[in-house]
Image 1 (cartoon, one colour):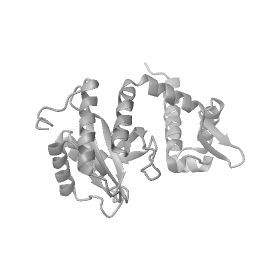
Image 2 (spheres, helix red, strand yellow):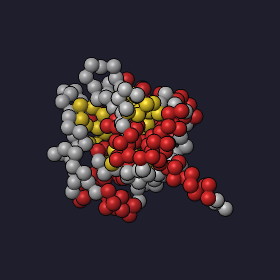
Image 3 (tube, rainbow, N blue to C red):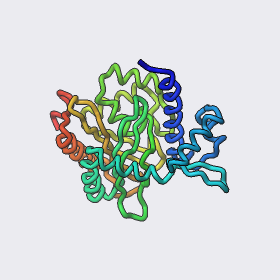
Image 4 (spheres, helix red, strand yellow):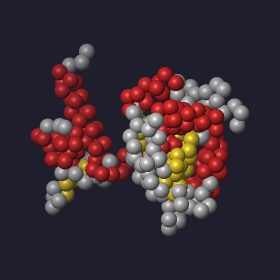
Length: 267
């Protein structure tokens, strides 16, 4: 039976997680106590106590001169160990590297976070002076870009409709798809081709193709994507799409997954 101590500690633990997630975002990577409290709508004294504990254990770093907090050094250790222990990341990393070398474009791996976001969990960038640069931990709405289309296209249609209704569409650029019928038509094309495309729909000047990696239940576990600049004269979305699809199939097989019945059978 849950006791009073359990009930009192769980909210503190949840607040701690929210603080770490807040500081992991690029726009909030250095934040004052006031910034954190305002951004998360939490009590100042509670926030300060938690930050002091995190600081003592090197989970956050406090810059005395600037009066700002940032993620601490011990999280680097935890991140490295987590990466070693999570088998699917180890399985995918070599394939990301090979795909990056073959396409000479930035290649990323994304994982769903709840039912509203996808997050970069791994990346490989080519050693070129001009390229797309991304940050592991960056998140994207499910209703945007090739990543979201790829994830939603292979879900139960009722669940997809619920997610779209709940999250709606945010207009990031003039090319963002915000019409629900047009978006659902895009999902149909994804199911037909096996991969999704996005042309400057989330970020101006940036395009992407993405393909799903399925688990043993036929659900999208991960999304692999190739991201490239729209003004590159030799950029070929169809070529990248087929390459990404080939790798996604290999990774699905290696991880013991399978596509939903009837999906991709003609490719």
